[in-house]
Image 1 (cartoon, one colour):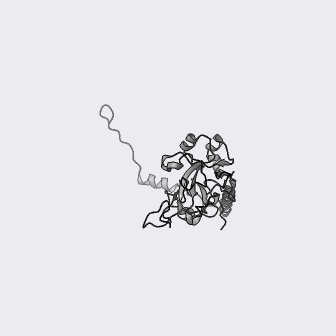
Image 2: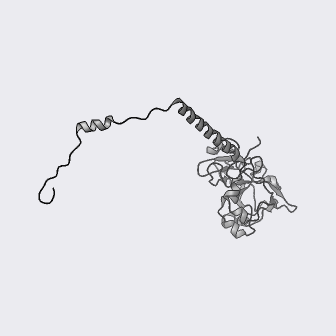
Image 3: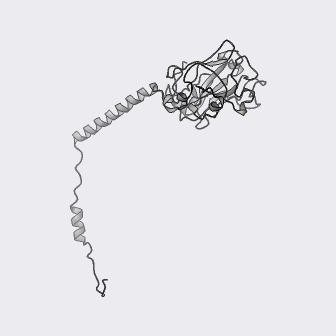
Length: 259
């Protein structure tokens, strides 16, 4: 209503006008055979390109790009294995690992080590970058953990090859009641287990035997690991790794396992 009391009536669409507008719509023509063929060719080219990129993935040193700690530390050189200085490790905390010391480093035990190190134990311990963290495991006795040489140890990456969570060694259950980690009436583990999605790696090979990582194709079904040796005094040494799938593996990706 306008000022002054005048009523304004707005026209509405009539049935005729509605049908007229709808009848004027013309659907797009269907694609021609030539257009369909061209679309299929583009899709095939895309698949080929993605396949080529995936084939190169094992040769890319992902860990180098993802870790700032490597460039900040000494780099990948031969170094002594030193346990992170965490109170939960008791007498082993902050110690250099000696293969002859079965008291401080008993069979079927595990610790976290940092590699490469910065030569600052406090800084290494506080470093949360899992790409420079490794789980050092002294094997159970039945797997040679009582040997006084480097074969008694393995060091697995703390980066799961599934979705990069941090696995941990589960020592239960050793067969020897007097051995570290023994608990009555528990199933035997002695395996490297990821708490996030249940991937389980066999010790000492590091091959995934259960969980999502075990369903992945080689080399993405085995955890990368360090090469260990000893010096003349029995101290455990970390050899300079070769980060490719045929040697120490690619951090966060995997490695081939000789079976």
